[in-house]
Image 1 (cartoon, rainbow, N blue to C red):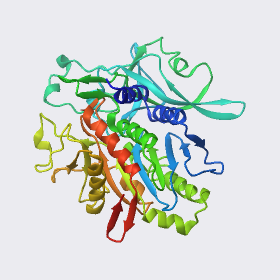
Image 2 (image 1 turned 90 degrees about the vertical axis):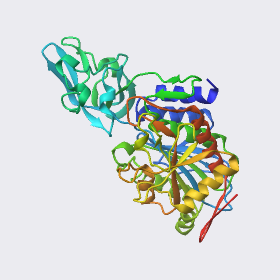
Image 3 (image 1 turned 60 degrees about the vertical axis):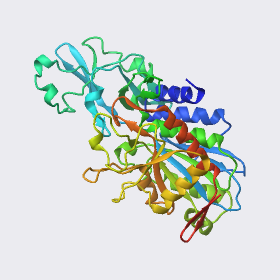
Image 4 (image 1 turned 180 degrees about the vertical axis):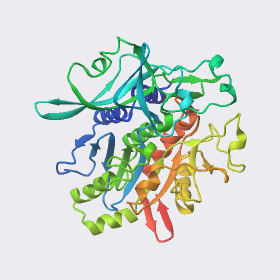
Length: 426
C-alpha cells in the first residue's frame, strides 16, 4: 500500500464521527504549517499564508495566493456519514439485557449495521468551574445489533423492513454491568450532555485480485475530505484564495450553523476579503469570478445490478473522476462549469467520466446546492465512483482516488478568468 493510500486509510479508520474527522483534519493542517484562526478574533492574513478556522465539527482551510485577481477556488466536502445517534437516557432494559435507545442520523442502509462491531463515539459536554466545554471521545468497548434468527423470521430473505425503534437498538450489556458505560467513554467527570453516535468499527481493507479496491466505513464522504486537504497542501502557486471547506450536517440537509446552507462559509469568505483590505464591492466581484467544486461520491455501475445505471452514461469503478449533472438541479453542474472542469482535468492528464441518474429514479443532492444559494458563483459537482453508498461499509477503486487528488490539485493550481460567456483557464 503506497503512502497516499495508507494516509487515507488511517484517516478513515480514525475518523469515527464528524467530530473526529474535524479533529484529525486540524492535526493534518497544523502539521503542514497552517495557522489556526478564530471567528471571535480579527483575521490577520498575509499573502502566501495558510490558515484554517473551525465551527463545531466544520472546518474551513485556505491559502492566500497572488491578489492581482482576487477570487476564490473552493473545494467543499462533508465530514458526516449516516449513523445511529444516542438519545438522552439511552439505556433500555429488556429482561436481563440492556440496549441503547437510538435514532437514525441520515439515510443509511440500516440492515448493513447488523452483526458488526460498533463503537460509541462523538462528543460529550462537561462543566468545570462554570466553564462548559466539549470533548471528542470513543468507547474502549464495542456493541452490536444482533439480527433476529431466520428461524424466528422465516420471510427475512424475501424482504425485511427495518423498524428503527425496534430493530436498531445496539446490545450494550447484561443487566447489572451497564453502570459504567458512560464513564468508560468520558472519564469520571460529570457529563451534562452529549452528541454520541453508534458507528461501524470495522477496519478498512483492500480486496480484489490485485488489491485494487478499498472497503471501509465512511468512504462517503471522508475520501473527498482527505483528498481536498492533500490537494490544498500540495498545489502549485496560483492567484487568489484556495479554500477547502469541510462541512457538517450534509446527511441531514446542510441547514444548520455548521452546514453548507448556513452562514459559516459565506462569513469566512467575507472576512478573508476584509482582512486583505477588500471592500463589499470587491467581495461581490470576487464571488462573480470564483469557482466552486462540490466533491461528493457518485454511484458506480453495480456489477450485479447494471440496470440501475443510466443506459448511456455508465459510471465505472476505475473510470476516473466523476462529473455529476442533473436537470432538476440536484447538482450544481451546468454546461459551462462541466466544460471548465474537463479542461482543467485534460490539461493535467486526469481521467474523468459523467454521471447522470436514470430518468425514472429520484436523485440525491449535495452540499453544493445549499452553499450556492448564498454564494453567487459558478460550480460543478464531482467525486469518486463508489458502491454501497450509505452502507455501514462502502467501497471504491483505488486508482480513482489518485485521479481525484490529482484533479483537485490541478483545480487549485489553475487560474480561472471569468468572462461573460465562460472562463479562460490558465
